[in-house]
Length: 266
Image 1: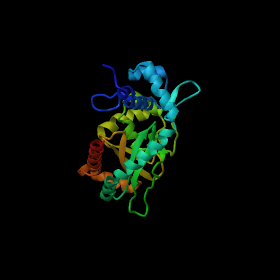
Image 2 (image 1 turned 30 degrees about the horizontal axis):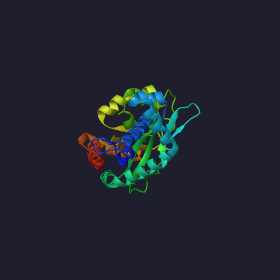
Image 3 (image 1 turned 120 degrees about the horizontal axis):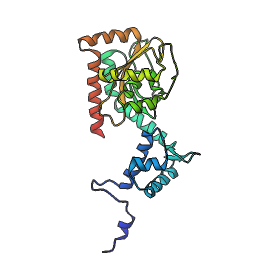
């Protein structure tokens, strides 16, 4: 039986109703992101298992649309058009999570933050500021290095050790204060305890006088963390409650509900 013109023109669809070429294109973008944003065609073929002609066709389309670009070494990198999509998605995530951030701020009295790990950097996507006159403020959309932030450390601790080491590099890392840990090996040693404890701390490592505590948001579609930040003395007073089942369990409970809601919405 001859194929109809409609069946010749329509993209292949899998049994779930998805369009196979679209799924494959997004899979290649995710592989590029997982590899640090840069990859060769042969690496993409090895990681995806797709035939080289298929990869050529998909990558060529992504390049034409600005979502991938080719550098001078003939490697492929994530393209600038993705920035607008990522920034918009990040703002929407922060807005959607705002009730959970507000709940955390009311429970602790301190500024509540939401951040994601993107291309080796921490991006703040949501915040509800403290009502205190002396409070911390981080501009939504700001990008910082993960080694000196509580959110960055809790997110890196969830990664396989080689992947976390790749994000940190060989060092030394930039020192923002005298308390910043600049040796990647020392940070990597801390990650086992961070993961086991379920929280991470920035003890004046990004800014003198500021202390932050972060927990991971489980089940989020992208690596995401929830944190509070404020003057060191006030945050330490909150941490002292933890011996009685205070701060960390409270943060983890809110993060767990947020993660469940994010997973359900996806």
